[in-house]
Image 1 (spheres, rainbow, N blue to C red):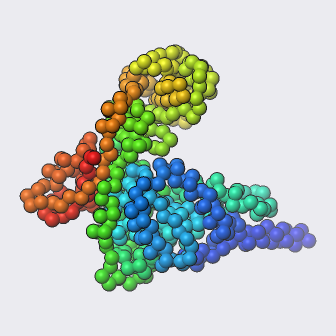
Image 2: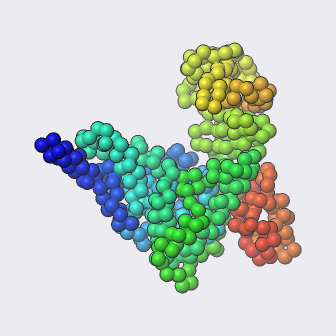
Image 3: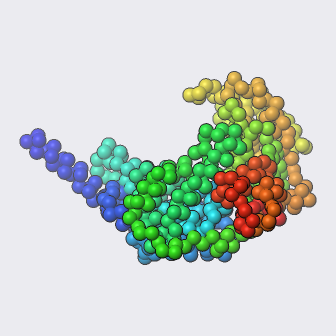
Length: 485
């Protein structure tokens, strides 16, 4: 009798699990979705879309480029197993090489990725891959996997109403987390299938992956950590290798496309004039300096630090696991900066809290020591009143045993913060992608030397155009170069 009851309980437990399974259109594979239907996915994508666009710097304000990318994406989507799904393709105003998809057909590519790609087929390889994540319902599958643990512990009751609203918060995060190797292989296989059906050169999947590896190696080299290439790449969230891409090409079982579409000329014309690197409207990194012409301020970080600009903050990573974080306080505050630092911003007893003046602006600083797995860390906060409504903040982080070494460099960064004059702000122009036809007798080094970059100009030129050596560049080649307005 006990055995029968146990079996009945097991059946009762499995029924909702089976009800929460579905067949993924792209793969034909049965997946556990946690009860998320395709209608739920559309609702979640619709809700999360504006939030994701805002988080990644907004949409890039170039209607012609956006139309071009959408046209390529829609051409691929029509070849998928969901040809009637209204896909939305968005170009993000971000210099980081990035692409991802939300459930319901929302696909994103950054202008940083568009800068790296060299032709329409390479763009199609990225869009096809992300469409594959949608048609394989990978986000729903990952949601189901995350729900399975809760179901196992809580039994019934997780399939109640309001699933879309419950899932909405987690799906945005899931979209940016790493996929499994099997999921990446599925998306590559599907993307290559859609490319072939649309007439594109499927080898572009491999050529663009090589460019991503080259770009991530260069970024790691410039950051002083050549071994950490995967930390500077889309490959963080899309763990792929050339072997797996080649495996996907074979698994897709597509026949070689006769006279495949590469589309180099159309693609280069589409991105000609696109902003390269940071958009001045959101602040720009120039070597060790960060300048924000719209908000009219600037500061510098110490030598050896690498600046990066994000929509919500600026960060600089330095040697010895040191960091500088900068942002704008979310609230205004009328009291003294010492009170803001002690009572509003920092939780904990600050050491050496003091009022200072930074270039005629009221400020306050103090520090505290916190334990961590890697040892004690020192955190120094700086709050600075820019005007009656605006407070800017620095957070300096260092291992406790390295704080003395970085005290003076951090101090110099503190006192480098200054207002920009209107004339200085107006002088800051965006860098842009320009097209250059190599002339007879013109060397790659000559072309690279004219690019307004701080360092590694030749290396940037080679990566930007998919060359492994300067000797490969010859007269008549059309190159992407970086120019200043």
